[in-house]
Amino acid sequence: MRKNNVHEVIDIRPVKKMEEIKIVEPATKGFMGMGGKPETVRYEKTGRQIPSRHAELVQGGKQEPAWRITYYVDDPEWKDYSGRRGQYLQIEIVLPETIMKKVEKLIDANPIFIRDIVERVMKEKILSDASRWSANQPDEKSLRPRYENWLNPRVYIQKENDPKGWNEQSARKIC
Image 1 (tube, rainbow, N blue to C red):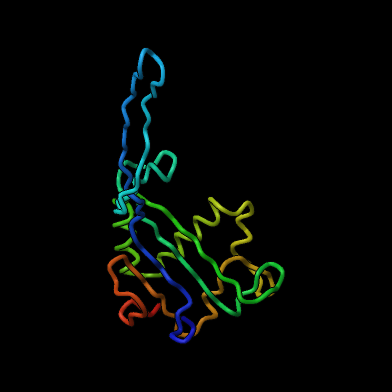
Image 2: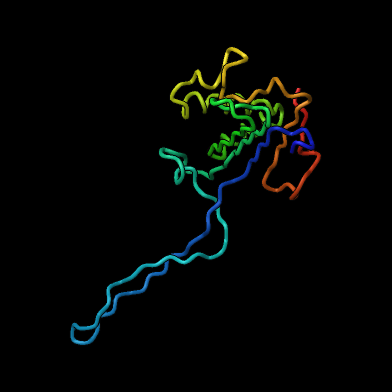
């Protein structure tokens, strides 16, 4: 990533799970009431991946396929609250497919949009003190990546059907 001046990676893909089939073994009566077995139910994995439902992963979620955005930032000069360098941020957001398709279009049009999403998630859902996200003074320790310090930054946008490995078309310049 550093060699290609990429500090941010956005990975967009559906959430999948291993398909299971339900196998019911009926009860047996035995002989003269002895030796019978109750009905048993077991699940076997088929080896096939199927989409997970948003409601299976998020309380109060939608009954549609779930999609995950993983956002990763790596900056060797970024300091944590104690002053240690080389921090990174990784956050995963699970959305229903209808919302994800809208978010994906916004990210494709302007990749910086992901930063707004991450800031809202951090301030509203994760941090107990939202002021920790943005430091006002240069010497303050902020949990927010120092985007403004990067020269000619690029973001790498990776999607489910993209080829494996480095793909130059997936690295987008940020204005």
